[in-house]
Length: 172
Image (cartoon, rainbow, N blue to C red; front, side, top):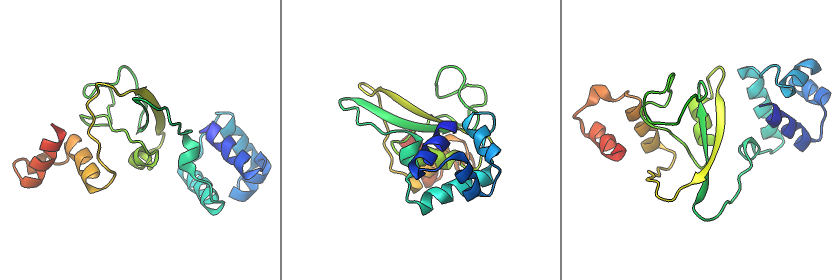
């Protein structure tokens, strides 16, 4: 977050005091954010987002520099409510907030929507070789949201229904 705030300031060509003034907060607050001593509250994040929108800055591009890696490599984005600890695997991690799957997208907005209301979310970029990797590519939309609901067990009460079976089959 601290690097993101610095980058936004640089793109706006303003200093910490000017950003603080735009947000209606003390300059020391921006300084603490940029030094990693504090994180912006949800309200401050919304204010910062509004400033970016009003200045036509695309936050998705600033969150992580998207690079065209070419070949079989791919940059994917993920966000977590608690952060990762240990190996990435579908089941059994402590505080796993992905249900039975690990959700990533090629667009930073997709994972950010999953944790946007969380208190201390962590955003990741992952780069790896996709050769020999099975991938289910679903455009962000209703099917994507319903599959996440299926993985998280929210549809378990509908076992045997057509809609449940659709997403169970998709998950296979």
